Length: 209
Image (cartoon, rainbow, N blue to C red; front, top):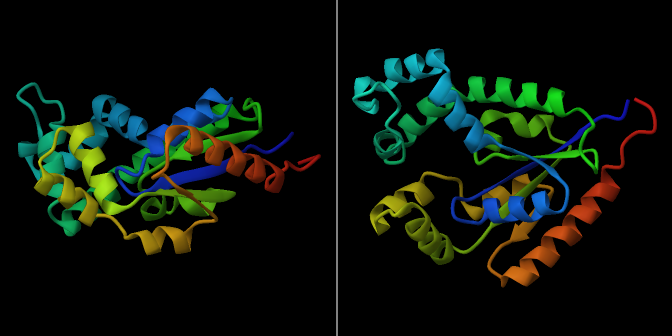
């Protein structure tokens, strides 16, 4: 059986990972969105939600007992210690679900590649399971404007999210490939397709596994 290759896609908030994923999805790639997995887990996995409450107290809950994401975000993005606590609490649940989905997909991808869109790829240690890592980066002002528009945040809140992450040098030095997303949409499409054509050649599956 041919082994499914995993390409980790990560980068800074507001850099445009979702846009890159959409381009790849439109071109036949299997995408696993770690953020969506995280939302599904905190919506449905009571054990995970209980663990979060144990760490951050009931103030992170809505009146109906569901997770108040905005409240949790205000706690973790203003304090790196709290962000680390969140990651350590929720990442094991996310990793288990991602592994389940990878096993389910098997070699169903047209290119025998699954793209894992994961903002916390390095923090989770999942980068070590990837055959290649691609980071999406963009300049700070561009990212700031995107986050404010996308999430309806104040400039202060958006800067907190930016400052809670690693800097550009970390991503460029830790990744196999870089996508610079401060170009026009047509150029970005061309850049992404060209890069993943190169990655497909590099990750040609074993004839027999």
